[in-house]
Image (cartoon, rainbow, N blue to C red; front, side, top):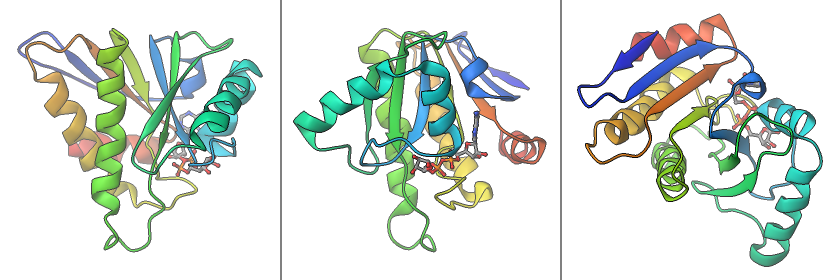
Length: 178
Ligand code: AR6
């Protein structure tokens, strides 16, 4: 499913494995220690190879990690991309601890990084809706609202954003929001 904007930008939804997607930037659902883990994070490090963790080690040594709601940039190793944006989503604790704003901030940070790095195509997973427990029916509208708002801008360098959902059920939630 895709949505075309009057300014030519495109938002796509698909089911798949984000490590198989070719794009200028792929987004990872990381943790604030930038330490790697399971889910999409594990898949990205396995497929991308050790250079990604070596770059994260350097970022960690300088900055100590990455706060929730923000993201850091590395190269993409063996992945078919130029960059990986490692975004740290919130752990869901019932929704009254500012999770929605932190999740929106993750997407906004990645979209800003995309503009700063002249990224034209990028792919997101559904941040926070796995291990971090964010209900996808709440997270989907936040993710789509931020990307839609960004792609609607006349001067966005970003041309195409894909959400790569990992199951048909997740895809249906995003599709119904879109
Ligand atoms: N491609 C696309 N989506 C995927 C893939 C994949 N290869 N693998 C999983 N997903 P999660 P979080 C989906 O848990 O909730 C890690 O340990 C998955 O089905 O990867 O933000 C990190 O190190 C779900 O819909 O990320 C952190 O500690 C979505 O990606 C923590 O998990 C996000 O699930 C972050 O948790």
